Length: 175
Image (cartoon, rainbow, N blue to C red):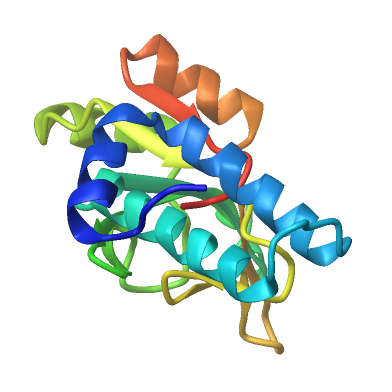
């Protein structure tokens, strides 16, 4: 279907948008899961790996935001238990960018906006982390005693960011 050498992948990373890559990845996942491929499994795996590499090239040093529900923070009272965390993609890992070092409180979108503006961060990526999995080392859920669950940004959070001039790219599948 397409070449997966370094030069070809770099070229494709400039042509495909983030949403294109996510849609292709979702299609390949569906074709594989439902056993609908007309190509050998090894070829599908090579293409899937190529898409992951295109995504890595395209999104390195980009910011990902997730809605957070933190049971421990809820126990602290009020609306402390939900909000947004922002991570910076560095290769094949996400690093804390705007994540509190404690779990007493989760920052809200309106608290993050001035910080994002100060740091000149004008675009955030979000998408669903499939239940029970992780994305680039970030688990969808952790701490079985006081669960902390990450998910796609809520519509109200997306509106808050967009109203502040911060673009939010919704990916059907995280890349």
